[in-house]
View 1: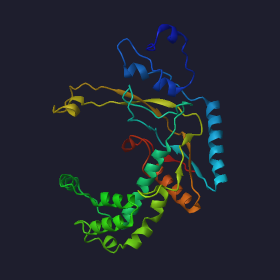
View 2: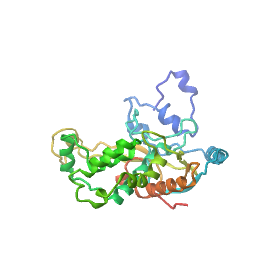
View 3: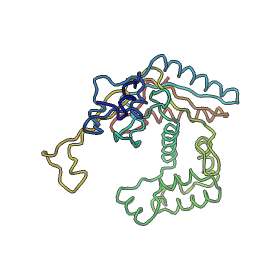
View 4: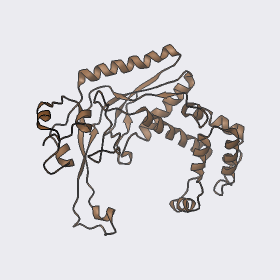
Length: 310
């Protein structure tokens, strides 16, 4: 293995415990080219520097506390990974799979944008269940897509996204006239005033097309040095997925290696707003989201779920 650099540069290049630099900037290459297996299959993957992480966490905590001077009320909690965690898995990378690492410190983190997204997903489903929004079958969804029609859940998302009262009334009327919603009493009895009351906290926390959300979702940092582990995807029927060939035992598995954050890694989560009620609501939604929905990639395979909320 070698660095794809001039010899005099490569000879003086050293990287000390910085996974971010190694993965994104100083990836080594074999004589056969960019070989994912050779580039990542090591007995010892680079880990995070504990003293550095301690300093980063101290700075992170001080930053959150500083928001109190502007009238904010931070809401914080810690949670532990129940299994492995992969964030940034689908980001474009020379190795085809990636891992979100801090550009300066090289430590894994969960972006605040991802946490806001998963919290919004949880809150969305909470409202959908409250209103008893009917789901659609795969066949119904395919037909509606072909007819350029929105499903009831998509219409609910439109309602939650817009901040214009007239547009909300129009979308609410469209939802009531949807063929799947005509017999749903909780939808038919929904007035504009009742809708604004139902979606009020949601709009304040996450924002609409007319105003930004009032809650800040901070990046989540690990509280202790997490172990970056080697993981593997091993599709057995590549020809079947890439062509019309039927799956068969004579297909050759092609393993794909990637890096993941190990289980039992504690993360520090934080939200903040000037309205304490919004802070408690957003914190509740975020706790429910990371424990029941998971965050990051491969959640359907058990990755990204949190436990031991404190």
